[in-house]
Every structure is written in structure tokens, then in C-alpha cells.
Image 1: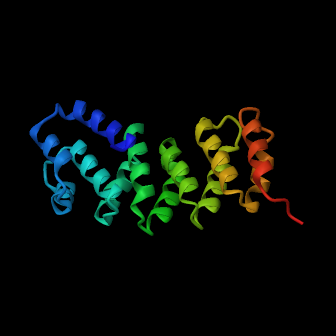
Image 2 (image 1 turned 45 degrees about the vertical axis):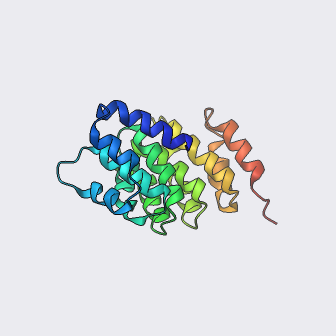
Length: 191
């Protein structure tokens, strides 16, 4: 069993109380049944999350909307699971949605997992969104240090030359300087 699926299953087993519905959603191989669980009235959030995660891993794009909603959830484990499934879903809408979440200043407290997902996707939207998100985190006393650090690490992984300027600016921030130095080493020099 995939480690992420095992972790999600254990977390949701506790949350659900290991109900019959939980056992059924964990065992079924019927994608139509899982897709129905995404929109069934009165279904608890854990059931929707389990169904969306399983569909996402299977590449079933019916999970997209639910996974995007979970990516922007206030509960970090839900965000992490959604990001993992979205990275494997293969839906072409994912990079644009992740970029919108990563750059939404009203939801910046929940931007960590969308930022990490953008770096993993390596899509055309990734570097511009990470640059924008990082620029906004460089104001004095910004409380979202972890989001800024994830942006820097993502930009280093992408090695996109467009990130050079914002990474240079990050060097002036003591909590970010070491990561920015590492990221800058990975970016090809402009000639």
C-alpha cells in the first residue's frame, strides 16, 4: 500500500470511527461509486476526502474539484493528502488552480501545500506563481515564513532564471538567506 494512502486511511479511520461506510469506501474498486460519494448529500468530509484521494491516485478526473477544495482546507493533513493526489491525477487544470491558491492573499495562511504542489508539477504556471507568492512574503515582519521558504525551495528546484531577482532580494532576510543561496546556485547564470 502506498505510504500516503496508508497514512490517510489511518487518519480517516480514527476520524470516522471505522464505520461501515469507511470500510466500504476503503475496499471498493468501483470508481463510479467513489465518484458518487463525492456529492452524496449528508456525506461527511472524511468520506469525500477518502473517495477523492482514491480517485485522484487512479487518475479519475472526477476527483478534481473536491481535491482542490481540500488543497485549500484549514487542516494541513487534508491539504497534504489533496496535494499528493492532485500531483498524480494528471488533470491539466491543476497547475492553474494551484497557482490561484498559492497567490491568493486572502488565503495565504493555507498556501503552503499549493506552493509545494506547484514545484512538484513543474508546469508553465509554476515559476511565475512562486515568484509572485515570494515577492509578497518579503515585506517586513511577514508572518508566513514557511510559505516564503517553500517558494524559495520550489524556485530552486525549478531552476528558472526568472527567479533570480526575487531570490536575490530574499538574501536580505535572515530566515530565508540560506535557502535563497542554495536556490540561486541551481539557477543557470544569464549571459
